[in-house]
Image (spheres, rainbow over the protein chains, first blue to last red):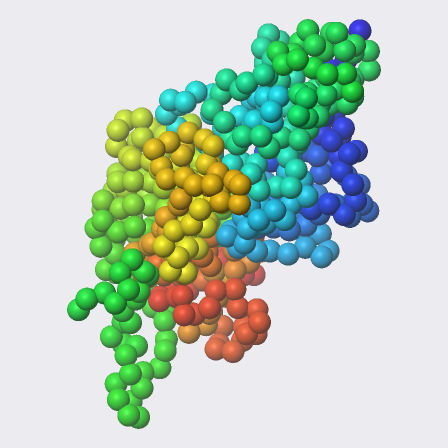
Length: 214
Length: 250
């Protein structure tokens, strides 16, 4: 029997794969927790789209700086060597190909690398786009962190074709779920890793897209 | 008088800043003494750029705009606010006709007004929003970007393939007014912004004909080292000193 990762478990799994020296943007949700699992003595530089380069850990209670927040408007710190830029420069970082990696949450990813993470229906009255579309097309590589299946267990978020409105087409390189790590390749989703006790057959059973053995 | 550069954020200098002749050149002093002076003359129908992202929102100026009473406004800001706070307060007056922003929270004054048919919404990806504002300030009349080109937001709009990528045509955003937050200001309007409170402030000041600043600190001309000016005074028209409440920041 296998044990799915919890959200922090997914974040920790991603953190293990980020090489020192990379310049990384973390989206809201599971990705935000990734930085907690990168030891401070490793030089990975985290970018927040509100113009902070070199985000550090959360401050101890009582010493929050009201002028320093991240993209989720949480109080953060800035590392030695960090910098502030204005919003257009911050998105020049995202859109201009200056990020080695962006990690986003998503509702669905398809086998050709499409990502859907901003709306559950085309006619949703109130739209929540934020910076995801800019990050998705601009980063040198995009990883997605999400649960493998929809809440309640039934639906697969790993799909042949996304059913929700797209954020961007053909941009996802890798997906980290609570069950597995999947690479997006021209031949479809390749299984790179599975949680302990998981089998390829059991994973395929929980996945709408066709999987390829890694 | 015809506009020499239609579509650009051209500005008319206030009469008080026009040199009065030989030996009588006016001193440049952009400080105003009261909130009423700061927001005076904001016309009905204005496009108002409101800076801020968790920090760096000029709350005092928003309160002044509400008091001033301009209506039929187009408001441009990062997000549509919450149930309370400056953006919610401004929207609740129902004097904003249209909101241009990157996202709206489902539980917010903005979402309720939109659902009730009392507010138009234009949702713009955040980087495109920032770049459209920057373009407005820089006189760039349009640009193509891959952001959103493959999405519902591109439906019915002009796209073209550039360097092998599908790109979407985006137009600049020009403000009649920008409401700006600063940490320090001098009388020429040179500004610094504190930490991540910088966000949209420098580009929104650039993109508006009338950039109105609330600053926590007033400093003498020259006190900000030239290399450390974040927003140059050329982009700023009015500055109001709003000391930070409490603590040692006054």
